Image 1 (tube, rainbow, N blue to C red):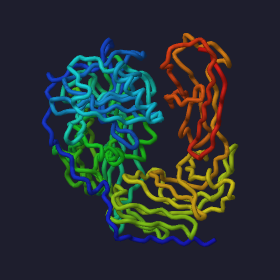
Image 2: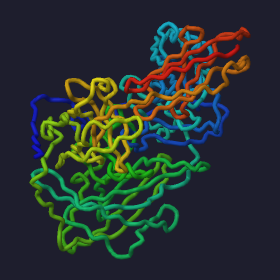
Image 3: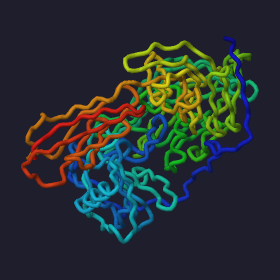
Amino acid sequence: MRRFLTVLLLAAACAGASAQTPTSDRTQRLNPDDYIFPVQQTSRLFSANFGELRPGHFHAGVDIKTDGEEGHPLVAVADGYVSRMTVSAGGYGRALYLTLNNGTTAVYGHLQRFRKDLEEHLRQERYARRTNGVDLWFTADRWPVRQGDVIGYAGNSGSSMGPHLHYEIRDTPTQRLHNVVREGIVRPQDNLPPRILRVHYVEVDTLGGVPVRGPVESYAVVRDAGGSYRLTRGEPVGVGRRGYFIVEASDRRNGVYNTFGLWRVEARIDGKPCFEYRMDGFTHDLSRCCDAVSCYALKIGSRNEVIRLAQLAGAPDAFYPVMEERGLVRTEPGQRRRFRIETEDDCGNRSSLEFTIVGRQTAFRAEADSTAVAVFPGRNSVLRIDDEAEIRIQKGSLYEPLFVRPERLDMPQSRAGLVVLSSAYRFLEPTTPLYSPALVTIHAQVPPSLRLRTVLAGRTVKGGLYCVGGTYSNGAVTAVTRTTGQLLVVADTLPPTVRPLFTEGVSLSTAEGLRFRVSDNFSGIASWTLRIDGQWVPCDRFPMKGTLVHLFDQPASRRRHTYELTVRDACGNSATHSGSFVR
């Protein structure tokens, strides 16, 4: 079938990344004397720092190790009050927010439990609302705290890979996040300079206002001594008339094997500063812009920081105190210049790499492609493939102008539990990040029996399928998503699996609670309901462990109880497991 591709530019205006107000340092610096360390009885080591580049967001706080254990007391870092308490399966899990008298808010994430009175209030609210997840807000007179008061206990809840405390300090009026290490609130042991691992170069040309890049050229780096690095090659690096560099680096701290992000990266040409990235803080609306600060196409395949030494059109100015010509390096044929990169961590340790560049005699020239269509950050766009599929991209969703080549691909094979109902469609390359989600619609013939279980799926480079979401209506599935790459329609027919982690009829008189192993083949666990003796009871989900846990909140009565657990996936499939225990 002949493919017709149309691009419609819509008049409606939407806020986007390029329209963000730069978040300069509008708040005063913090006073380290106002705060004490948030967790007791630990070695005060760290596993992640503020502002680390992660696909989709900057890391919003610091992760403090709890020596592989849960239950370490957490204390109020300053006088204030408990203003918010949340429980969720993902994210920060059990989290506590303290509004402090000094104008900041302290956030504690991944708790095992709250202190006794808060835990009892949480229990009452969950029973009253009959809901597992809650988001509770309080006024200043409800739960006042003094500096040093125990407020909870460190744990491993939410999207946590191991016991630790996620700790943030925010400016209360603006919710701007502070770099607590750089401002001296916490002081890690660190005299290790950042590690510069590789340098990449990309030459750039433009066609009709759209940047087109040449192939990425990568160069190995070796350390001479301390924080001094050099390229492994001895000859100058050939560069075009216009291009930019990308630095791949990481940082370490004393006493741990974890890697950390950088605080600052500076570039100089012939001794003159031309670029500086700095992570002093940000508001949550700018967190996703980490995909513009990093070189996203390289970052998604690397565990290191991969920082583009140039500013994309949609990258906020807030992160760049120094920027000349958006970081582009211009070199004439035969011209020799010195290029220097300096990296610095949040404890003040520095590393540097300096090398010679020389202008090539020939420059990269982009070639026009009649099958490509230009889309721009400042416009709303619709891309259609025949009458089968379309994507609506909001103004401000793209970080830069792009040439796109939407196409219909083959229909993947079904796998156990999944029914593939359409061809795969690709509107944007999988290496294209979006600031705001797009609206994707794909038409498909779906049998009535499968319509409630039909969603969009993404297809990995290895051919695997993963759930994107969406709903079926009037012959098509529509989803709001930031997923790019190949998309298709599938139906999920398998229910979740449920397995109790105790023996049927066993005595649990000395046990803390009921524990179940739960999993799903495709769309993931969406909801669950546990009843004991016919009555609803709260149940916590730990997605990284694959478990559901109900902690007993009534004294043992030494009698037999019945339970019934129903688990549903995101496509509406459900599984129920029932049995009994003695307590």
